[in-house]
Amino acid sequence: GSRIIITTRDRGLLNSCGVNNIYEVKCLDDEEALQVFKKLAFGGRPPPSHGFEQLFIRASQLAHGLPSALVAYASYLSENTTIERWEEELCLLENLPHENVEKIL
Image 1 (cartoon, rainbow, N blue to C red):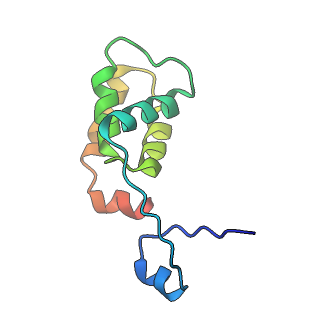
Image 2: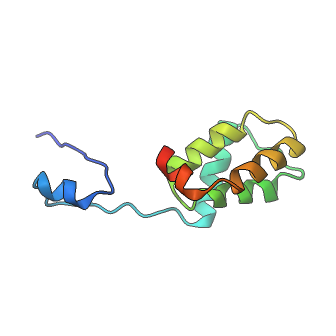
């Protein structure tokens, strides 16, 4: 048999489609989010070991455990190679209104 997977936050949509089996995806905890972020940001390469750890934590916490946000932030920040640049970009991201980020995701 086949399966159709629908991803949405709108339960009304699921009800209107007659969906009976709903799987609620949970957010990642802080440690899981941090590990996923590092892996995504460095594509399997070992992350820089000196001075970046607090920046990794800040970046992963910005995503609030949402995998799609981790992917977006990791992709965005991976282009930066210096601690100073990461700091600048994180400050910009931390000051974005959360509603704007949610719309994108």
